[in-house]
Length: 380
Image (cartoon, rainbow, N blue to C red; front, side, top):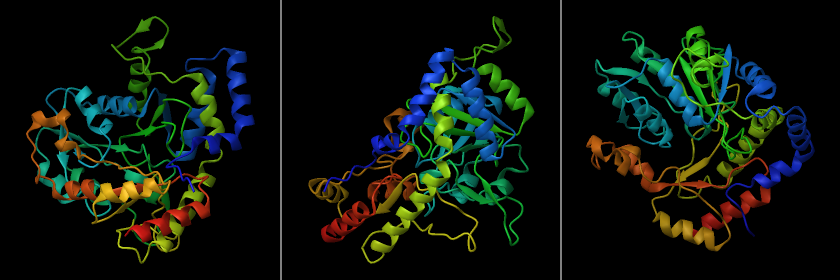
């Protein structure tokens, strides 16, 4: 049996007629750059997330960049970033002329608050919690950490479309779940094709409840202008195409269904691998027990056995896997100039050596999951 890591063809086949209709509409109206189809999606996504505003941009990286600029991050500032995330989280900081300050992660792969607290200085302007792998990061401790020193929270929601957690500041039972994208000064989403909500190309969005951030980002994404040829600021060409806006509107209708299927698949993995010598995600939560609703962008395990051998054996059996991420950011060549060394952030380094991402996408079949699990148990 061949089991792909992700198969977008299956998803698109199921909604092909709707996608084709949306694309034809864009062509009929020649609304190729921003325009009404992007604006329609912005309104729909803001309503879905529960935010006051949504501003679509060209990628998740540009969403992070503009969010940081709106927070006033600039040259000489420091921004705290977890070491276990995609490089775009740190790149956006560098694009502002600021310095990413890398901190360790905890058992959930999220930013470790103790590590973060130690790195706060008078230069710290913002902190970027990453809702990694589709699990919403608890932010109550982070709020208490930054509330008294004016540090902005910029949520990185690139892997967590639809993930929820109990609202910060109200942890008494019952806790009302609230979607990520509402907890920070601004929040960045990616619509890269393989995301839980993916475009047919690049795309991103910023959600915010701040009026000034909205006005600033709206100008900056379009050459510093809100009216043609009137440029108030030196901005960027970070606009989303009309085609992506129309396609995302179609896909948004299915997001909760797809996320529910991801949770079902994660539960199947969890049950099948419960007696296997691997570390599993600990997020098999139920609505009446835990206000956390993971959406499993990735299903990540850890193995103490040589990962290269395990992945090769899985590949030989037709199973595709991934590593997210093999090198923690503080040890990448891109940030070697910051002077970090192996041993500085031990948990991020340990996880980077042990993690394996198993196949995960809504159209994955139950028998494919069973085959992955049975094969993995045979190997280990």
